[in-house]
Length: 254
Length: 230
Image (tube, rainbow over all chains, first blue to last red; front, side, top):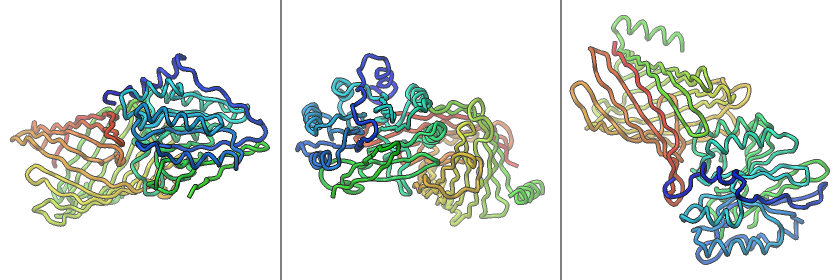
């Protein structure tokens, strides 16, 4: 990628140990809920759909969030600092991964790693599920991250969720916004199926979509961007873990 | 299809059909995804005027080794002076080690070459297939199925008596169909070194582009071989 550190460089830095990954949040190990969405995309007027999400946390007893990149539209420092503040105000812990909008400015990666840490990392929640955060901000995965992903998926002690910015598949009439290469998609899907991953959760496309390919759930988790969205209303994906079972639902904020 | 192949071979042998087979050896690299040698056998056949048939097999070596793809196409010439052809093309591609495959049906309208330019536009129905049936060309349903648009615009910018060079964009070829998110660039050429015998070569890449003009270079593929016109 021109003038930006490409995914391979970001991943190597993320896995070098020089960046501190967020640790596991504390939840009731028999019953917890978490919300997943992408693209708060705070704009130059400091607007974001995130403000509409705040009341959901208390109403639905959400324990933590996963935010799948594109925090702001332009990635200028003022916008980035504002969105971090607003995420903090929601009042529950959150995990993040990087989106392509973070790379709009030359200093985007520097800001991201200074504020959120590595762009790829894994965390086990309450000994129950494993969240694998992947850097797909370039629309591709890269050699080091592919190897790392396979290692993470091979550890089958817990249901594994891959959380990242780009979808792998995007429905019957796809827009352009998913992993680009046919061969890359075939390889990713084969790894997910081989190791029995539970789900690939993505943002990027501003809508709620669900596909099941082989045994793997593919979610486009909704967006919290401001204004009217390209592919539906703002929304999020809500996972509930209770009594050793997992359930999911889309929540649309119309 | 095998009966059709035998018929076309007999027509060629009898001098009743124009048959142009080719053998190409190549290499494909995509960072983190695959690195493999390729061998492709293809044939273009014109069994009767205004009908074009093409078929091919490709093989992978060193990764996903074995059959890599198969293709069969039928084209009808709509307007000969402009080289206007309507084509239907069936492709099967597979990655053996990953137990993954993809079946595709392309409908294309192609034109040219006119003043060295050739163009194409169309749609592809792609059906990824995973697991036990990855090898099957008969699976045409699946949750990951999708429609993609396709396009081609190439310019033969050097045309000499014994050789030519061409460059341009093409989202599809015999064994690959790119997605709308890829911008595929290619250059190819040929050198006629004996009567009816040509050395051919091709190099291609795909730029992955997304919003705000951020781009990255992705796959690289090149190959060279010989083509013979019966």
